[in-house]
Length: 359
Image (cartoon, rainbow, N blue to C red):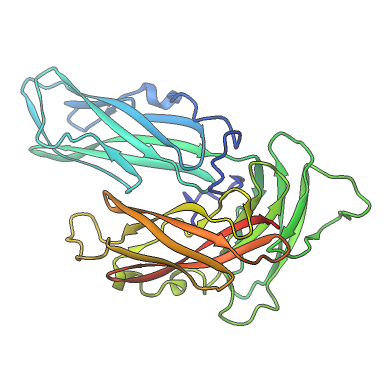
């Protein structure tokens, strides 16, 4: 997914770039779970890292969170840090390579966890190794990206010929809300009649792809709501054609789009807005990156109902942040799902903008 982890239980969702102020409360002060009270120890018990885990609790989508760990050298001699690297490219850390820790001394490791703009639990690890000892110390961080709406399940399972199903959508604060559309069409509710029944805090809605032509299934199914900080609730569609087959040239390009949907605030027709998307190197750590993979040359619209063009791009580690200007010229009942394309010197790939649009 787009899922942050492969943990299947109930996941918090309104997946969106709706980083609006009241989406949920700001990232809470990092707290240590009971497990973090113990030190992470190598087999020789010479080096420790404290805490083992920092839990940021509930965090906003797209937010950044800094964590501080202390590495302690309990041995009788100084030790040199040989390497320090994160488990994923969403984590940055202080440069500790070749730094020495004196006997009985400490050194601080500062790491930053970038929360995705998708729902669910995000975790990351930092591995630290020492000269003469290959077994790493491991510092862990995690946070739960949460939004005003909850969904169950968190994605659309359309694998192995399955083309119909239901999802449950409910508000975190139990407040009633309305589902306006599903991909711009009238929602197919289970046990609810929007004409006769009052608004609820929980709905069950059907999805049906039985009439979608072969090869035309899109990556996302979007539910439009009247919740202020969650106008679009996108579900990742899991289908044989929406995974690797959807982007068969990723290895050839040497990059991919980690979050392939952009969800801005409500838009107005013919009113351009500046949005952001990222691409990420697909090369394994330590392997040389081909020249030009990060040279973004264009952002374009595949559909003439929308316009898009690149404003700027900036390389940040193994990622490139791309700012582009987008405008909707037409909409389907006030909803748009715009296919766009980003191009570098090594190739192109698709991503999408989904939004509620005022006339």
